[in-house]
Length: 332
View 1 (spheres, rainbow, N blue to C red):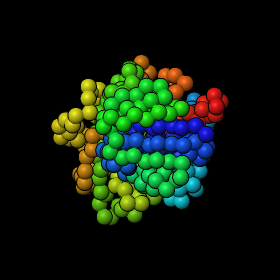
View 2 (cartoon, one colour; view 1 turned 180 degrees about the vertical axis):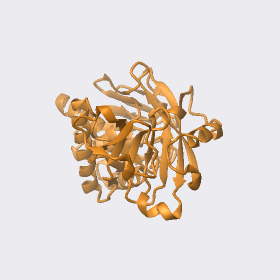
View 3 (cartoon, one colour; view 1 turned 60 degrees about the vertical axis):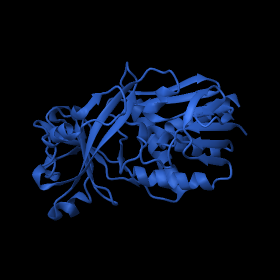
View 4 (cartoon, rainbow, N blue to C red; view 1 turned 120 degrees about the horizontal axis):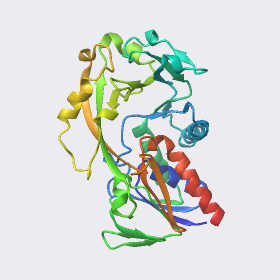
């Protein structure tokens, strides 16, 4: 049995804590706020889980594995949080090859860019993020090998060592830092910070039933970089675009009004003006400054850092946890 301290109780931290406990290790889970923390970057109504990555069989296999692990977590936690609604991506009509094509006319309330058709990823869907975080927190709090410590801000970390702001020092065989954009404040790993605007909509009453069975859709907007996640199971319709994703220096809140207005002018939905804007949210994520993707750094035998998640960090969290646990078992 090893001892593990996990810093950050977002999706990566919680899934890692769960997998470590399932493997028989003693876990301490820390967060600077409550657990689950509504201010965490993982907190949201829903996140996409895409499986198919056309032209990238390795990534497709990895995300199929991630999906399998999410279903395993559903069984473990006794809570449903994956909606297999499928995801349709707008694709150049002349380049579909052997992909499964969806006629845009079957999705009349979505505006597909000219010259595109839909390509279906039938195994994809929506992860109900807040529902998972609630279920994971409850499981961890009840597990005999896990100590959950909310309201425990961390001052610094090192291999095998975590120091809290209140002066408490925690030793461990392995420290995992999964504190989202704030990881860079604890470990010197270069990342690039982004802020992205999300808008949450309520469809008009006469379209509510249609949207309850709609897929997620990507590749939308004037430059094919917008996307939507459908409402359902208590969630709203969420839209966003890479157009409203920008590099920032910190997580301090800015004025979102301009970015919301810009997003609402994107050609994403038919009759956009019929949809009620319920909320807008500024989300932050960190990315590798060179590739724009995710980072998982094994700084040393006793320290792992997940400083950057790219744009799909939530869906990939079980893969990160598996990598860490596998490495621990190998060095045992």
